[in-house]
Structure formats: structure tokens, C-alpha cells
Length: 335
Image 1 (spheres, one colour):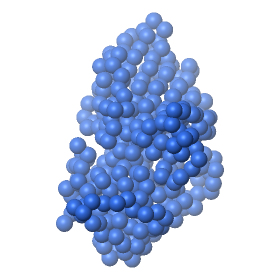
Image 2 (cartoon, one colour):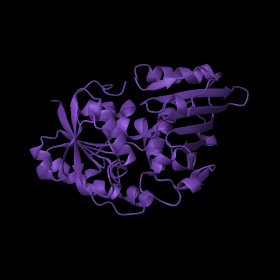
Image 3 (spheres, one colour):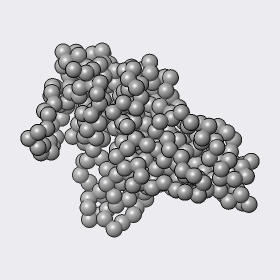
Image 4 (cartoon, helix red, strand yellow):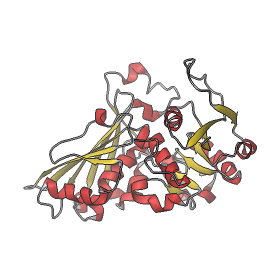
């Protein structure tokens, strides 16, 4: 029997993906925590191994000996449950946006509601392993990054750190996501008839993921133009990032910045200059694929960053964080 970990919100898209990943993890045993039975479970074939199910209470977390609890829940539910799970002795990895920002005022601005557990904001470690690995390993409260910021920060932050972007010219991030990023709860906007054969922008200029990009990449709000768009596909994110390069003579020089930064990172893959990744290449994987292009004469540069929003953008990154927090190999259950 492996280390026991709990999942709240296992019926949602990210939660279901998390259960799937944990089922094949050699070191853990998933336990389903019932919080709200708001929908029926999908049918299972007769050979499927049934999971232990217990109520989502501190008493059950203690009784089951859960080392860690994943909250694949809306932000308000995460704020309600996180303190109780921590008090029960479990580490917490929250997949919502509840604990990603450091200040209650910033949360109120971007999420348009007051934070219900502000005392945890300073403790929660931002869980982007490529940049926050040391903090994750010793944390009891980890906030899983948003899907859009994961792809954006992996592309932008190394270039900002290297001084390779002319920040006075700004950065444009054109981000497109599959419909599963909106969650499983039914809505008119994500219904089949609205999405199919369509492409739509939303939350223009005030998307709640913007402050995560600013926080990690170290840029100012006025320097970034971010637009999210809904693709008529189930899963995947493709972000096309435009900027003016500074002191860079070729696409290979841009690529060398990424090579140096991600040389030992197991989940970032780089494409040769001029070759661009696509969504098919990352589907159902924990990889972030990055491609670059540069017009040396004008300094115009394009970086394409691609992830699966349900894996590297949610459940896979949560498992990566769990591996770090519980002392497993970082790639366990993901390769």
C-alpha cells in the first residue's frame, strides 16, 4: 500500500484527470473525498478497481492517514476546506485560484470577491516547479498555478531574466484554450452549439490569470497585453507571444536562453528555430513545448508555448508538486 492521498472534486475535469494520473502512480493510493455529490459518477467497466470513498471531513482525513489532500474545487470551496485539511495534518495542493496571489487586495481586484482565508496567502507556495522547486519541497500548502500562466511564464520569464525583451515595446500574449478549461459545470457559453465552429475572446483586459504572469515573470501590468480565447476543442492551450527582442541576433540565440534555463527540466521541450509546437504534441502529457522565431532585421520575435490544460495546466502539475512535497521522484507517474 502506497502513501494515501485524498482528492476533493474528483468528478470535475481536473479532478478526474488527477484520479487517472494517481491510479498509475506507483507510490500513492488515491482516496476520494466526498464533499458535494452534485452529479453522478461516470460508468465504470467491471474490471475497474473501486476507490476508497470517505466524507470530506478532518476526522476522515485523520482516520484514513492522508498525507496530502488535493482540492480540485472552485476557489470558494478551497478557501472553506484548506484550513480544515491543514489542521487535520495533511499537506494541501489547491488547484483553484484561491491562494495564488499574495495579497487579499489583489485577490479582490482580479476575482471580484473578498478572500475568505487571507491568513493562508502568505504561507501558500506558488507551485510552478521550474521556478519554485525549493519552496515546494518543504511546503504544507501549495497553490497550483493557472493553466494560462503556466504556459506564459515558462515562455516569458527566462527572456525577461536574460534581458532579451525590449520591455518598452510591450509583450502581447494571444492565448487559446480548449473548453475543458472552463470546468464541467454546464453553461450556455460552453454548450456545444455555442462552441462548435466558433472562436471567441473573453475576459478581455481583466482576465484573472494576468496577475500570476506579472508576479512570476516580473513584469508590470502596462507591459502585458493578454487575451484568452475559447477554442472548439476539448483540451489544450496554445499561446502565441509577440515582443521585440533586445540584443538578440538570431532565433538560435533566443533558443540558447531557454536551453540554459531548462537544460535539466524534465517537462520542458524545445523545438529547433523556426519549428513550432502544436496541441497534438502535448495532449495528455505534462510537457510544455516551446518554439521560437525571430526577424533579426526588425527585432520582431514570436514564441509559441503549448501545454495540455488538464495535465501540465492542472492535474499533472499537481502530481509534479505532490512528488516534490512528499519526496518522490519528480517525474513519477508522469512519464
